[in-house]
Length: 219
Picture 1 (cartoon, one colour):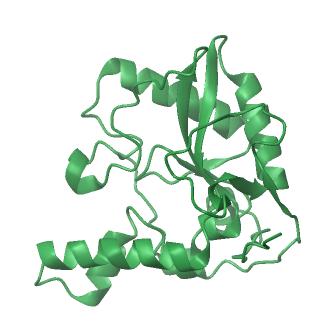
Picture 2 (cartoon, rainbow, N blue to C red):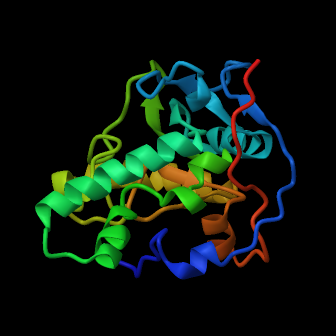
């Protein structure tokens, strides 16, 4: 398994952000993507993405083999919700590992939930997604989406070797399309892809991120 840069790495936080002002858009508006409602919230924030990220997703979908489609699960996540998720998981790890110091807990939690101050979801630049067949049936990619490292024994890592050959092929199909459309993966979560955020900038060598955290404007 290749070396992984975690979201908690200081190199990620050190990437400057030059907010481009691109709006959040609703991915359901043109009906081109399959959208799952498992992460739906009262404000429908889950279905929002930066306009440019959505364009790349639609491009990626066009690169998939015939009969396959992207299944969108979650995009934008308000900063307060991201903070809640991070603190909840960090608390679970603290209970499991009472001897770990704060730095180790923070790094371990960032394998599964991005630290709130740099979270790509809160910038509208990240998407959790998977593959479906032509009838909308979700394909096997080795674990359920959002399986944490403890539950999955590390099979949630994109390059994990404890998954079936079929699941591996499906991950490769998904990854090839998304990378060719300009997105990058967070290697501890096969389902998490982003573009324009700090992690993307670090991974691609871009001089700065295009998108920073933002609050959702309500109608």
